[in-house]
Image 1 (spheres, rainbow, N blue to C red):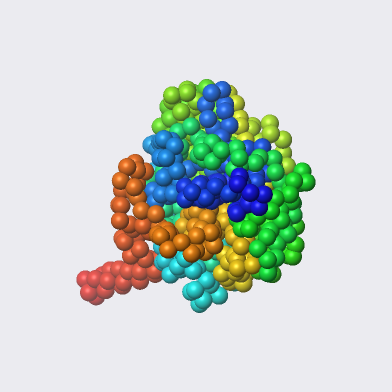
Image 2: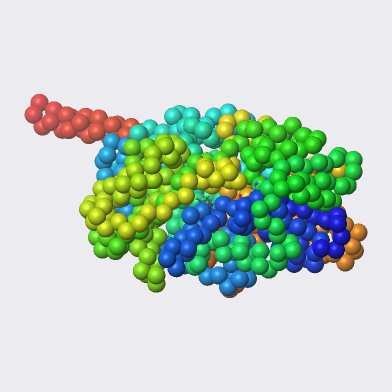
Length: 538
Ligand SMILES: Cc1cc2nc3c(=O)[nH]c(=O)nc-3n(C[C@H](O)[C@H](O)[C@H](O)COP(=O)(O)OP(=O)(O)OC[C@H]3O[C@@H](n4cnc5c(N)ncnc54)[C@H](O)[C@@H]3O)c2cc1C
């Protein structure tokens, strides 16, 4: 580094902090440093080596339009592969009723429940499309109305069948890792909008779960670290104290190993709920403090259960289960996680929200037994119990430098109160800049969002401060990175960014309307028959 005072210091060596550093590096700014608390980079992505096979125990899935993370993967020659989803999926409802279905929507439920579920999904899509991903707070009517209720409140007012409620709740748990009564309806709608639609978030094909990275997702962070070099990334540096000023240009950052760094610009690439783990002097502005106090991470134990053979595939199942029972079975949903190349036959299962909190109190062996029993029952295959070879798990709530996963959530009345102040820089001329996936305007909560927020923070530093007087600077910010011609992960409908229910599904009536029509029709039919009988015999 060229001087004792750093031009840019970045807190956090997750994808967001590394992407900020990478953006500076690619734009020929060398005087920066990333401080990472853990002894590894990658944060909420983590790939472990299991007998020579890479296993993602953190963020893993990627899909079309996540063009920033896909661009980084391409830069490092990391390929993607599709998730296996052929065969039957299994739905288990809270009363133990088990049924099989194919596709994303469990069509094995009754017709009225299906119409009800369709209505809830369509309504979610319609509402989320009224929000701007750039300035979600700008639709005041919507934000005021829906930020005062939780997703559960909304469901209670709108849903007509218990089955539809159960499935919608399970979907919300799967996307957010919290119970629907913990999260603001407006925050949920904004999240769905930010992630390009309810089907984009829930689907495998064309959705956010379409693929994984060959060799694991943490590779991207490891390769970024290699590219930037050890002089730009320091591991095992837990930032404890930040002394900043609203009038001066110098910021002093102290780590728990007593190392002190001085910088002119500070990028904080952490989830807002982690700001409170750092002592700021003076304190952060009130809205940032409110954010760090009121936002919190979801709860998740990611499990990968390894089997002697892919028993589920041999019996015609995809490996996908959706379980609405909340806590009696640990896994809320699962995917096949097999790699034929490594003869690694596994199912990835998410233990989420209340289920995660309850099952975290049990031992690892108890969880392993319960997960295998659940799979044996779901796939009607006793070999899932007897042929279990190993069990890998990661409880993200126990991770000090994450505090949970996948992302920070907002309970009700937080979003409308924080408005844009959560996203705003502070300090003298805004020299404290905030990144991290939570602040992304596209795919917030996802790896792609982490990259976007990091790059945007670095862009801001360059254009507003470092090169603001450079007349030749032609740097432009593109919020929505276009699909690269070489990219194999692309939506089958390339022009359609938002992906919600189809036009036909949008036209389908509510369950209660169909019931009413049937009632009127049956009354009419009975009337006709009565009249025919009357005219025939009297
Ligand atoms: C189980 C699980 C499944 C997921 N599934 C997916 C998925 O399928 N697809 C997807 O796109 N995303 C998924 N995600 C989310 C995705 O991993 C995250 O959105 C993304 O990695 C966040 O990156 P980030 O850089 O914003 O934050 P982080 O990765 O949290 O990075 C922040 C970094 O800051 C460090 N840090 C914290 N405190 C300090 C401090 N005081 N001083 C210095 N450093 C500090 C942390 O160690 C961390 O490395 C998943 C996450 C989990 C855990």
